Length: 91
Image 1 (cartoon, rainbow, N blue to C red):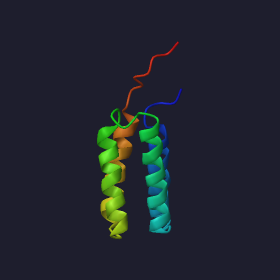
Image 2: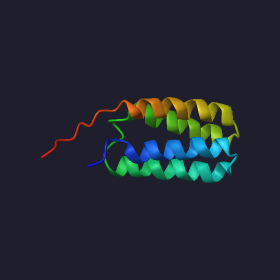
Image 3: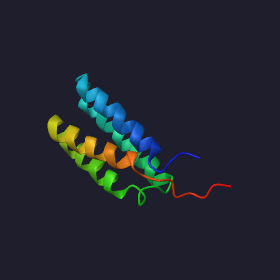
């Protein structure tokens, strides 16, 4: 079973790499939007709430072409997501 926020973490890493490569900002925003939807659908939003807020903040920054702020918010989200313990029961 994946860790809480795993898809979100992968999306954050993808977008950070895309920002370094000067990828299309609207496509990067789509990656984050999709990851947020997966996170909600899997019931992980409350487990990674701070990272979700950072990703939402990054999406706003991307829409305003503020890549530096988006990068900072995503790096904070990435740090939060790497420190999330699994709270799911293992059998």
